[in-house]
Image (cartoon, rainbow, N blue to C red; front, side, top):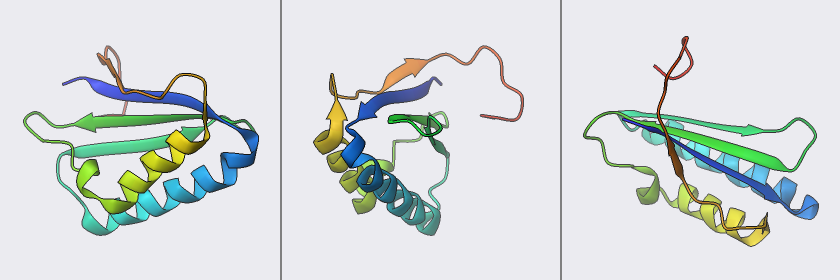
Length: 101
């Protein structure tokens, strides 16, 4: 199964709102604890670039669209994204040491 990556930049004035939305989304995911998902979010240190990584187990449907806070995160990102609209890109894992699996 591929790992999906979403990479984008946000306007400087939107960094706090996006960061807060990420925190709320992860709290909701942690509360619901869906099976078969690995999910991480990164921000370039002191920058406006964000990267989300999503790994779904074989046969598992993405649970994030069913979590209200995750949908609100997408809306917040769409509001503040600079440049092309962020879209998930599939990546094939060719090396991994305790990061993804």
